[in-house]
Length: 342
Image (cartoon, rainbow, N blue to C red; front, side, top):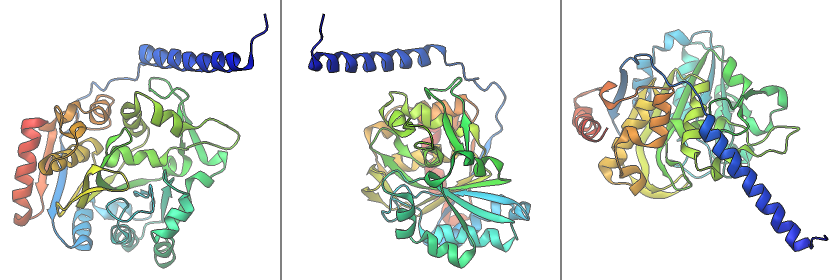
């Protein structure tokens, strides 16, 4: 029996939808990513209230014992998803201060790796002044979506919600130290909030040479998006995270939204703990229903990251450390939110 072209297209589309639905069901039913059963050590999260970004970042970096970075190769992940100004993107002074501080302890090299999601990465980095900072500081820049295949490492899908796995940069995985700096924002495209865990999406290849598959289409159309975000973080370690929350977006995001001014910089080694503190800051100012609803450690990004061992698994394991008396009141209010809503 001859099938008409329109009917053939319809049947093909239904077949694709059916295959995707089956694939998602399979992933959901067989995912066996090991749940962390080890006792996670309490995580210290440092906080400083300040209007002086450079001084605040320097003081927080001192908590990372920069002497340990001497002679090391450091990979730096900032937040340059788009060319929109801070708090949509990492503030130039934050980036410059981190790089100069690392140079002062004679690291071997600092490599900034980035793949922008809203615009051409090289154009984005040029518009926000990253190449100027590179020229003045010796910062190396790796435009990730220009990398050849041999610069990527395939992460297999076993146990994750990624149907075909995903790719991370070889430079990241071979570095001695990894520093991440992120912003305080909500995310209206399904992430709900974007801090250190979500910032890792900018490390994942959208596609790789020789493949037609689009990993970002999968991520942003998946009902498991927030779980997939968390799972990226299980495959690389961070040595320090700086969350620049002098300003932030309490709604909207990631490139624009309702502006708030907490005048805080937050830092620590534990991505789950840092993001939980960031969510508490958003709740303090009032945020979206997705961010405000339920307990903080039941939010999908945080819950999944905690259960697979990326960081602490309860608010009680977060030890908030204000750097001075001026920061203490903010720390106490954030801690109260963590205790009551964590």
